[in-house]
Length: 232
Image (cartoon, rainbow, N blue to C red):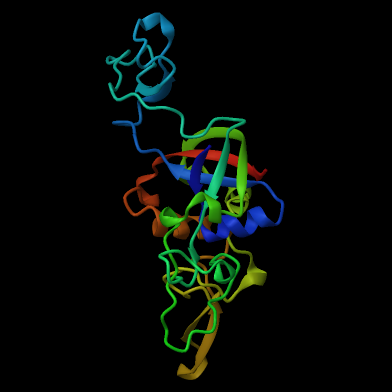
């Protein structure tokens, strides 16, 4: 069983029992908009890459019809696939190079412990051994689309925060997760305005995408895997 790293907002939605839409940029992006995703068939005789994906110009009216990329890649997600979940975690070390199991905490749902010496450090998900994982998921559906085509409902399925959860530890550049920001009011007084940069799930998804995937910014509209997963 392969691991998958989920972010805090995805973990919180998963724990409610609701399906989660996991959106991940494809490592292999097409050279330009003319290319479509295609699967290498057995008729090509390339048994090593048979069944893998690549990008192909399939429009017959295009002068470059049939041109394709030679970088073949497997599906990142497969319907029915089970995966165990890695997430941001922490624990106090013990004297033997391990951890104190009863101090194990998960950043998505737990607060830091009492720490008068400010020594607590949240650990990266990639350092999580399987034995400390609390969740596993199963993939029910997979699609590919460009990130700007993710709808409002789909953005909500990714686990983006809802209004009732403000204030947030959320990287909105305007309100810093507060949902409101200061502004000049009448007679040069200061008032607060609702933030318009994170007032929909789609806008919040954009901010989270840019925070998590700086190499594939939202403005570049990268092609992404969209996998619907549930806790198994």
